[in-house]
Length: 237
Image (cartoon, helix red, strand yellow):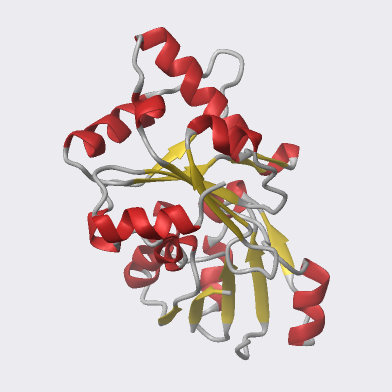
């Protein structure tokens, strides 16, 4: 049996995928101590290209891939289940807790969110900005945009809210747009941890506020109801 687990079970082989997010609280060592088991760390390359060998072990034994948050948000994990079906490997999916479980704490209504995006850290010869187009489309429909912030595991670099706002401002400068200045924004840091922070305000408000916990996320609000405005006022910087 293959288990796809949103972070334990009884598998003989436990592997933790660490490229889609990281702990908001706790550590890898704490997880091993809690489980009383050895956990193998893996990266994106292995999950996408070499995990088939472990799936074969799941035909006769128990193998688990531990994933931060909702394990089926990433296309790679869906492919693993497709591979299980293809090679007749029995599997079980156990959902976990994701950032999306906490956005309602902002007071924003979940059904008013449009397409989620990831704000990507620009690099040399690589500076995508298509996520901004989706934010604009959401705005036209009056919908909120949940923005995940990029993670570079190989560099141990997590994008911060302040950095994400800077990236968006550069894009707006090139396009001569002013979406950010016209929008109410919400910053979420350390979701699910004892140090979780949720604050609302203008782009300058959020740039000045000290978000200390990671991972972080940004919400760009669309049309707001009276009740949503009341909730955001209570979270204002």
